[in-house]
Length: 175
View (tube, helix red, strand yellow):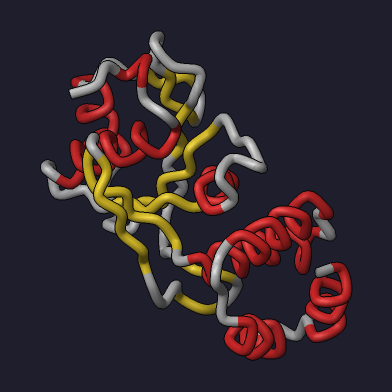
């Protein structure tokens, strides 16, 4: 097994995910680190958002993270051998008002990476743009769309349900 200091962001995510899963804690990679993964690091994120889909207690997560050598600092978990830090936002795993429909899995040397599908990753980043006018979220959605196969019909449908047709047009115009 690789040492934590030699792990890439997604290798670290898979390692932590498998360690948590061994204790019955389910998490899914989301946010900027999912964008980093799907854009081949054209966008760089230093944090890993692991959504706590099993609604496990923080104390249970902390116990596993302690075993892995991480320590809690505010809402993050930090490890002395890596610059990446980990956060565990509570579920449910959703994009806007809808639950996430698909989790993608990738076998890595350090474990199984569970991450939002490319389509749901785009929706996740568009949420930041749609609801908070976050232009970085828009750019991230564009990066993933240009780097991966995404279901634009589904994103359009979802945008309409969210009441964000005008913003969807801004997204497609910028593509």
